[in-house]
Length: 389
Ligand code: SF4
Image 1: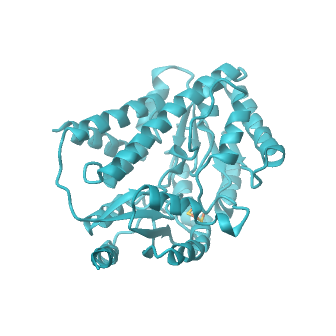
Image 2: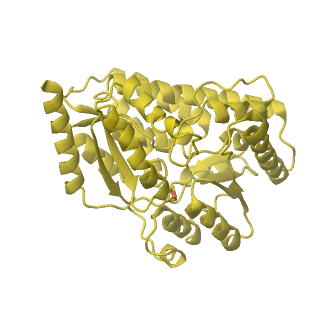
Image 3: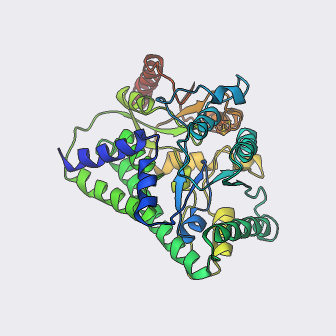
């Protein structure tokens, strides 16, 4: 087996393991270790890491988990990730977690947070609010207060307060992890045939359960290995995926888009790995620096408030320009209010700039890929025809 295939196989095993054995093994290696789950899109994982705990990204049940009890907790017409997350919890698969953080993504996640508090009374559960105001003196103060509360909670959970030195050390660890992921994204945009998104995606998923130090090494190992294994280059259309920041598409859907003739050169999968856009100073007041990074140097998504209409689409256009994309594929979960309400505004921005786009919806357990492959293939063909004109 080639080095790349071995890395991808390892990531695939982690991705498919809905019993979170990697987390159980990490905990078992040192008695007393704790793990804290979080839902996408962003939580300051540095705080969890600084407490000596493992941050674990919980991204629903995917397409292999049968949701039986989870459906009873929600009405029919909402997305699937809360139901499958409840299913994971009720079936004991998340028993290895000592707590859960629910960031303020949307009302569905807010409700899920409340349900979790009722269902799992013996666990630490926090609805983690993030600011909707980007002034340091308003949103910044609020956010520092929110992070301080989390810091104190986690300190109590481990039995000792989290120090500034521990936080700064964790900021440095995550700076390195973000740098590795940024290298991966730059490499894929430069040579998408060498780093298919089906592999990049699995690498990111591995980062949801592995300690960040180990994940950083794995990403760099992959980059070194894939560069040594030349693959065929195709005349594919270069696209950005938008709308998949919360409930994830099935892996088969990502593969279908690629097989249809598209190179995915940027996306919004697991934004927590790239939320902060540059290095956070690791020698200052840690919460203040994390707050400033969130307020002034962070990614954009439908779950994040934007002050003015002019800001809408700026981040997406930057992705298109810097990655040399030729079009945008809007792929959002069915019934995802944030993504689907923002979509027309983003489409308007693209239309005004002559950037082609196509749009469809999915669920994490979507099984029928033929229509998506046909739509993405037609889109890729049309891009090639236009660019040849
Ligand atoms: S998929 Fe969309 S609607 Fe559903 S929980 Fe996530 S952000 Fe909310």
